[in-house]
Image 1 (cartoon, rainbow, N blue to C red):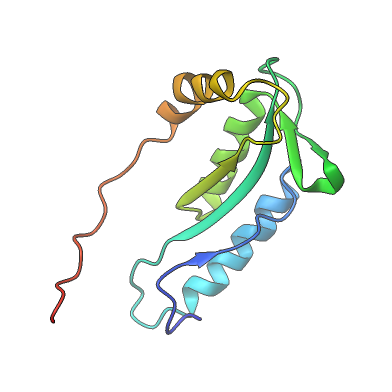
Image 2: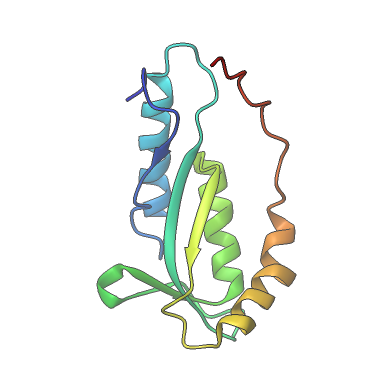
Length: 129
């Protein structure tokens, strides 16, 4: 995988406490050590989310641990831990949220996304046909 993968999409481990992001960081570091040229390869993970309207609601696993119920501050904390672990992209599934999707998206856009701005990426490779 280190030699041939353009990136890596993994399940995030547990997301309700710091132990999961710590294990995820170890996996990402081990993988990146195997990249022969030391070049950039993105890591992607995801979480199904029930974002509640209380911003301080603690990170709580539901649905057997496959969904994270939390307030925006818990999500911000998790995304920061993922960032430190080496995650470059995160997909957040909101279809299990109890709140209307428009409300959840508005809260994410207003309070969460500004804390994790996009960065300029590498130029695309030249395609030779």
